[in-house]
Every structure is written in C-alpha cells, then in structure tokens.
Image 1 (cartoon, helix red, strand yellow):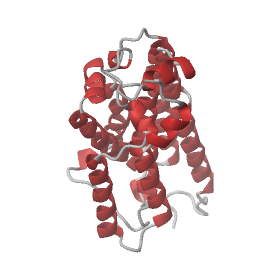
Image 2: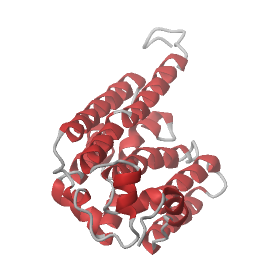
Image 3: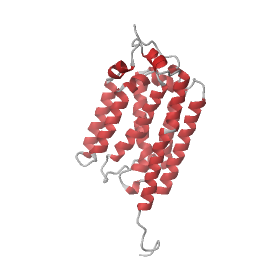
Image 4: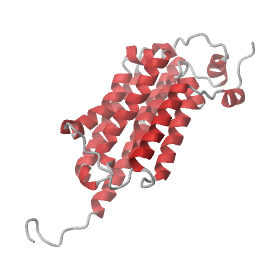
Length: 262
C-alpha cells in the first residue's frame, strides 16, 4: 500500500465521533437555555466553530496517537481559546457567582487553568488520553470546564465579578510563566512525556510514512514542536489578555472626589 499524501490526508482526515457531537450539542442547548437571544452570539458561533474544528479536523486525527504537537494544539484551543470565547458570548447581565464561594476564588481558577496542563501531561494520563476514546472524552470535558474556571476571573460578564486590572495582570502573567516552564521542560526533555507518540499504534491508513518522510517530523522534533506551542503561542494569548487588562485599567474613569468623600 502506498503512503498517504498530504492532499489526501487533508481531504480524508476529518473525524466524526459521536462523543464530540454530543458535547457540542450540550453546549449549544445550554447556551440557548441560559442566554436565548440576549447573548453575544458571534462569540458563541466562534467558540463552537473552534471546538468542532479542534475535534473533527485532521488535527484531531493526528492528535489521536500520532503527533504530540497536534495533541498540544488541541489542548491550547480547548483550555484557552474555546472557554474564553464562551465567556465572552454571555450577556453582560449574566452572573457567574458560584456556591460554595471557594470555587470562585482566584487561586482555584488559577490552579484550574495551569493545573489542567500539568496534570494531563503526566505520562500515564497523556498516554491514556492518546489511546482511549473514553479517557480522551473525559480530558476534553475537563479542559473546557477548567478553562472556564480559569477565564472566569478575567472575563466574567459582570465587571464586579472580575479581578481588578492589576490583580488580573499578575494572575495572567503568573499563568504564562507556569505554562512557559512546562513548555521549556517538554521542549528540552527526551521523548518520554507521552511515549505513545514515539511508538504509534498500527497505521492502516499509512499516515506515518507521510509524517516521517514527507513532513520530516521525528518523535524528537514532534515533542519539541509541542513544547514550543505551549511556550510561545500560548503565552502570546496570555500577553494579549494582559494588554486587554492594561487597556481596561486606564479606561476606568478617575473619581472626582477623594476616597470616602461624597
């Protein structure tokens, strides 16, 4: 059997897993039930578009045990991009206060976002997610939920439920630093973090010859690319959010009276 070519892969590499369709349908129904026509639907359409492309495009086929870098791209989109767009799609009047209140604390949100990346790259969980549809589905749901928990502190619809700009800047910068640290470790480590990508399972569609020969991606280079994706693009997203907080900080009008004077 001849190896698959890149054009053939781009045409045939789309996947349609029922679990991904179910997650997408739940998100759509939940949004319509909560927001109706009051939400900012453009952001929601963008969130769902990114979600379905992440889970059904050729990137998902590569992430399914063949390319660690594709797996990392999925993580970034599911943890950072989709949750941020979902929160931005909520109407300004919507409250995200949670019970118990400890779940809404900034430290919990920070641990949710940063911890999700570190946790799912423990070798045993990373390998399990790359070989089991059940574990992969649990991973997808957890990344979306934990991502919402992280971005809630910065992008909650109500201004009073967000961190102040100085605190939000520190929150985002420290998250950027923690994820950069993991990215550096992945970039410089031997190929042992997710060993399943170094020894892929049988490849009936002959994608591996395309990946190794046509694309020139070895397991070592693949892990380096994955680490760099976390190290650079992910922090660029955080830096863009930090810039937004700086703009928000200086956009707050100064009070004409000293504090306490009415």
